Length: 501
Ligand code: FAD
Image (cartoon, rainbow, N blue to C red):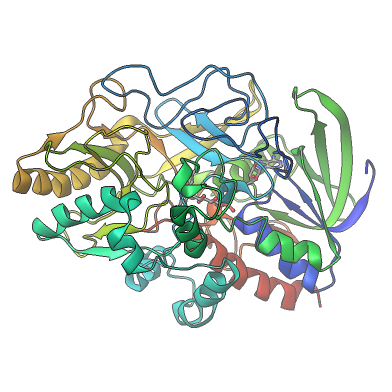
């Protein structure tokens, strides 16, 4: 309520915020979660909570007039995107000058829209990226804890080998192996037993029904079913949806003062609330957390925040690309939306790449092999605050994506050479084979040990914490959700022991 004072607030409800809410709630700390997106629990007129990728409606995207799907065209035709009414849909695409970033909006954050691939990073790379973190504790305790809480499981290889829904993956894996590359199964939070029932026709289709980036109506163990459900069950956590934190200040007692807009579906402000709290956990994601902190520093509300806030940002080396297969290698009419395999060439010192074998569930045979490559791109961007628009602006230039494109190209050139195949140039606009201007894995902006101490406490202030993907400096070498979760578990344990005594 307006004027409320609460012991703890978590901003956002993605991985970092959800871990914070659960561990605070368990420790008996009354915690309010403020999430700008919707609570996705009520079916629409079609009886479903979320819409599919092939027939997107207003529920698909965050206040857009037209969908902005990652693959914009097919055969250069504008057949992918649809006009929609502006609405607080579940997927946002935040467009900066040379980089667009996909993020989830809703109670559960990115877990509502992501592929759920749950990969523990390689230990040597983790140690290089976050040298200040005790890797032994992470690998012995916090990674296993995160995997268990997130309900991570792995597809049954027997099901994978025979189902038509993973033909696209088997074709791409066999081609990679023939080119001398190593493939690995990738665990996921999607419930593979449920998926087998979808395939058998005994459960409603979700992953096998074209659902993922605009939400899954079943099967996916998103955060609302795991961490956030457990947090609510403590009785100490409340979640307020459609509550957007506009600004953070501090009062004479050292309490944090939040200005929060409660908005309706037309995005009109219903009420602007003032909420104060003793402990403030920022879990608004790499973009959201960094923007709130930059705004606070640059407007003078929290002037002592570190100069490092805003820097160390990267897209986890994301590069998307697609190959055209021969007519005798169809990739399948039916495709699961959940990737379960990757090409792991991270040991190649000239071109470190971990590429997921991505589906293209178009409902027609396309002969396309699609990939999301994660590369070791050392380039970093930086956010600055633009007072005129009151927004964070990303300084990342297109040429900074080049090291990632070069690495991905060397992997897929190898596969094309082996099989006499070529790239598809009709999918990403501008006749490009490599999509290097958008990402799914924004990381950094409030880097652990630079803008914060070793546990995410913001330098310059007390009882103020970053808990999410903003802590990871631009790259982690694999899909990031497990690392974000495990790091939050580690940080919260230390914070609860020391700051709530
Ligand atoms: P987020 O999950 O981004 O959550 C932040 C939340 O804060 C959002 O709900 C947002 O609405 C809210 N928020 C922001 N600002 C405010 C504000 N001012 N006030 C109130 N609320 C606010 N990762 C993987 O590991 N595996 C995958 O397979 C995978 N696939 C992906 C596919 C897609 C399409 C996308 C978009 C991402 C994917 N990711 C994947 C990435 C992963 O989802 C993110 O890395 C992760 O969600 C980031 O977690 P977070 O806790 O930092 O914040």
